[in-house]
Each structure stands twice: as structure tokens, then as C-alpha cells.
Image (cartoon, rainbow, N blue to C red; front, side):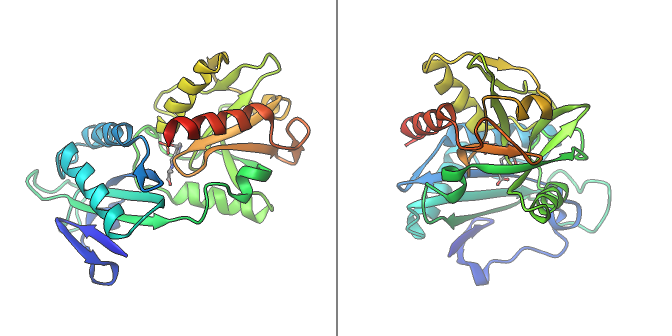
Length: 279
Ligand code: PDD
């Protein structure tokens, strides 16, 4: 692969970041993942806007203008002949002596992007649905900032895998916040789409915004409020969204089947409608 590091396009084996980089030492960094379908970037303006917000919330310097960031995405897609997959972007507070105090404001940020290929839009998960296990949400209190502090989500996913499940849903104060790397939804028995409202406790998913728009266009009622694991287990359907999962049904929660234990018609319809609009 050709990757982008601080202004240069290089073969991945020749791309280097310092061992003193604050992304490495302190997870002092933010990221974005933008899907690529048919060589086209999906929802780039949304990802770019969220990146700006993450940078601002942490006082991280901007590595480039929006137009430059778009141009780098396009260049990487083109140089790697990427048809299907995603572009990963990361900005760190740069290289400095290890110190809890931030380095001088003029320290250049590290700016890294790379592409990752996938084989198909339709995955086993999308076709058969996900089994999820609940885990306590022990992440920090600013999950709306897309930082690279992903150790706990990674541990939660491993815990789910150990139980023979596909993913974990985080629970805080009795309600589901989100998945390890996706937003969580249920379809109520009234046919409404319910998902947690935006706040500091979840990531403001770009796919979530697109999904809620599509749901509205299909005439589905949307309720932005939290739900419990028991409500999700008793719901008509459940599903998740992300730049990687698009819309993926959830068919089992903590060993209890959701609905008839197969992907539901509303999640299927939303997936098709989302992909229609996105592509
Ligand atoms: N994850 N919630 C969390 C905790 C996430 O990490 C993600 C995305 C989402 C969905 O956001 P979006 O629709 O903008 O992708 C929700 C990315 C895909 C990742 O970490 O790979």
C-alpha cells in the first residue's frame, strides 16, 4: 500500500512516525474512518466536520484544510486503486519529549492516512446478523470525541468473542450507550426506530445521521431516547450502524434472540435504503 505521512506518499514499509509521538505515548490523537464504495468516498463532508470538532475539543492543531484533506483521500484511493474499503485518517499532537503537559502550540501535528480494502459490501454479519454481549461502559466521559483510546472497546470486543459473540454493547446506568465501534438501535413494536440521543456519552455517528434521515424519508418514526438491554431483547428488531457496518442487524443480545432471531425486514430495508443513498 501507499500511505500518507506528514505531507508525503510512501510505500507502507517506508512510512515512519517517531517513538516520541504523542499518539503513541498518550493516545493523544483523533481519527476518522471514511468508507469507500465503487472508488467513491461516502459521507466525506460529515467525517471532515466531525474531525474538525474532535480537533477543536482537544485543542489539537489542524493538519490541513478541508480541501487538502479531501485531495489526500482521493489521491490515496487512486494510488491504491481502492474500489471497496475505507480510508483511515489520524491526527496526533506530534512529537515531543514525554511530558503530561502539552508541547508548544507550534509543534507540528502528525498526520497519517492509509487505505484498507474489503472484499464485499455484503458480509456474513450483514446477512446473518450479529450476536452481541453486554459489557459495562467503562470508557471515559467524552465519547463524542473520536480519540484513538480504543483499548477498552477492543477488550470489550474480545470479551464478546470469548463468549462466542460478534460484538459488545456498552451499558451505563442501566441503558445501552452504543456498540464497541457502532451506534445501536432497536425497532419498537410500534415500528419506531429508537436510538440514544446525542451527548457526551456516545460518538455522533456519521452513518447515524444518514440513517435517521433515511428512516424519516421512509416514513418511520424516530425516537432519540435510550433503551435497556431488556427492551432490546424484547424489541421487534435491533441493528447497528457505522462506516464499516453500514446498517447491520442484531439478532441476539446476551443469549436472547431478538424477534425470531433472524435479520428483521426493517433493518434490511434501512440497509438497502442507506446504501442506495450513499452510493
Ligand atoms: N467506528 N460509535 C463508536 C464508538 C465508533 O467507534 C463508531 C465508528 C461509531 C459509528 O460512527 P460512524 O457512523 O461515523 O462510523 C459509533 C469506526 C468505524 C472505527 O472505529 O473503525
